[in-house]
Length: 471
Ligand code: ZN
Image (cartoon, rainbow, N blue to C red):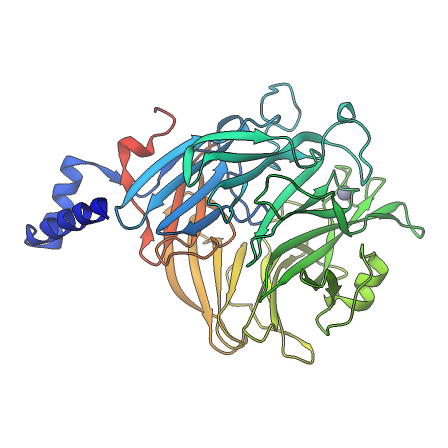
């Protein structure tokens, strides 16, 4: 309380002493050059939609996690009341990112997901990409690299010291954390490389122990062609005890696609949606029909299909529900055969009206990746990363007031010439000033400036503090 009073006094004094806004900014620039990024040590694809949440707002503070130097996880925090930044602190050591001879220079799969438990300890899961044969048999899939690890803050709400625990499967990758209202923690992830089941591990004791992995999406040999069924879900909290899942299908071919000389290709199709009622332990489709788990490709096609997309390729679904539990789903869709890097795809938007899936017209959305926030059946926002034709990277919000039939650009959060951005999923329970974490990609370096963006643009920080690579 005392600290709060002091801070309030300072702010009042500050405003009273200022004659104009212009005066304020020139003073602040002179005394403390401030920048609009909070750290300069993001590394590679420092954040992504899939490993999430990368940020959580809790009791006045936003906590953020991202991939830093040597692919290790870093955590920083921002106090919205005192305007004080802390960190970034290294929260663990990844097995990946340390071998200069590795063919793929930056693996990027082990980015941290972050969660705060009901006892206020902060958790991250990071560093995994399927484990290696040296780690032993993977009972639910195949191997690739890394070790999925779980680290916890040593003290409640204190990001400065961390302990890595040995209580989750090291074969995991693409970690996705969810805390339910009763405090139960679910860690969702793929249990290995492409040819692996997707599973969850559940903790009912604030992450001290986790139950064994439970499969919910099944990898399976195909009998018609030389390939395996593989999946990419994005998992989030729905209403009440529900967990909601948007996913697409990866056809993991054995042999080179004849149209593509580079070998294995990340060919993905279709849009699916399903729900996990965690109270009853029952998975179901959008019509409330029960699903037998783990879900096979055949059952997914029969019971959970939002949209069949057989020719175009898909990437990175996201989903949210309205107060009635009716879902909306976004999926990146675009032509990609033999042209993996042909350019970004455009988001397609689907909504369930209680009877059927309706596809929106999103042709006016710029191409790029985004997350969705459903306020009601008709009111929906998309937070989007895109690049304009003159090489300007932009993070913007697009609003619809007719359930996605039309989207209009509502706000630009950040815009930079000669830059591209990668974005996190929306921050959990966000403060309006801090909705999304963004890494700025610039040519010629693997290091990224990290931004925390909200309704007032980027949250600023003193340049000295933000220079994490120097500190
Ligand atoms: Zn594959």
